[in-house]
Image (cartoon, rainbow, N blue to C red):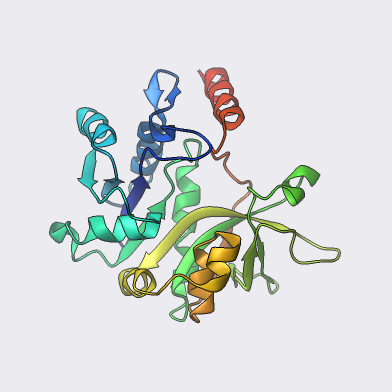
Length: 246
């Protein structure tokens, strides 16, 4: 198996759920749950790219690998790139996963699937999508949708557009974008040096910067989107799910 470096960008600033990475879930901060899921993949090293010393100390106390980054960096991709430049011991690893720090329930097997699109040399970035099965997902802006078209028996499809609106129009499958990205190292470097784009700023979706610049994003399917923690109600749902598992 070709190794990869899993990087989890995180910081305390959050407009909707303050101090989200340190939110208690079953007696453990959420960022540690995400780190543990990443470690279960056995893909390669797992590094937290932290924007706050408080997070860094907790991760180090749990035996995790953490790099301190500028708290004012504007995106997760910028944060992992900043950390990557400090990790000279991993310069030989050419594949980088950007795993959001608010996915404590993500299935390690699904993280593996983000690499599927990178089997095509023309694809710059791999990501994950899941079917939208409930009407409420179609309508809420926090569920990002992606327009893509799968050929018969295809393992992945090119992303044509991402939006907080319901796309595409008409009858047919709708796809929920899951915020996990698999980069080739050179693709990550190219992406973070691009200026923020018009559609990125309008939709508040940084992946549109890549599409507007002509980069190719490939989408691999997983069975269901993991519950992300964006609000207090999301946090309570995750707590209830894990309580039942215990």
